[in-house]
Amino acid sequence: MVHEEEKEILAPIPISSTPFIPPASPKTNPIKQPTTANIPQNIPLAVQYPLELLAIQHEMTQFYKDDNPSKRTFPSLQGFSKPQNIDEYLKMKTKQPELIAKHVSKGKGDKNYQGTYQYELSKVRKLEDFARDLSKSISELPPYKASRSQFNGWSLEALKEEQNRIKMMNKDP
Image 1 (cartoon, one colour):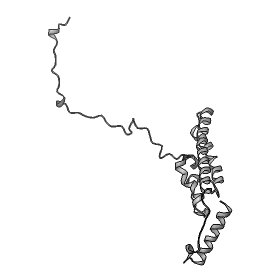
Image 2 (image 1 turned 90 degrees about the horizontal axis):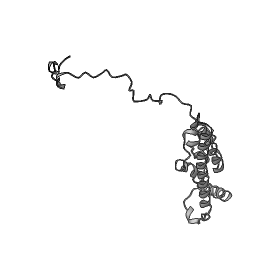
Image 3 (image 1 turned 30 degrees about the vertical axis):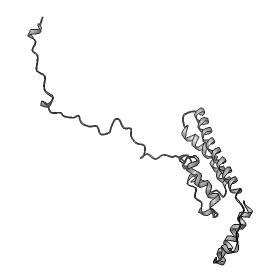
Image 4 (image 1 turned 135 degrees about the vertical axis):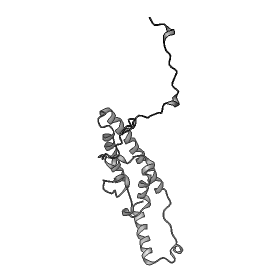
């Protein structure tokens, strides 16, 4: 039997007396996951561009502001043909929810696909409502009226261009 009195108790070692040697750092941080930014992904452009109204409102108003279709730009429709009117544009936008739903719910089942598809379709309905309201507000504008004094100093070419623009407006209000 060993008595407590016989035990030798060592004095504690002060922390500052032993140098601290940090462990070797790992080559990769175990907390951080490897980034997938360098891994190429085949995500269709239509999936990457949102369907929110604020994101594409400018695209939709171009049909009413830009008379020249070649000047209109549609970043959200890359990979699609260029629409000539708002109806074609909205028809193309109705294809986007299916592409988004397929991508987002890949491997998650039919229920997830249906939920995502319905959610994205509701966004397209908002776009259609916006287009309808915009068209209605523009059609309620008073007809184009002008007087001779407005065109003083205009070149013949500019007058013909204005005349053609007025004819186009009268055909497609």
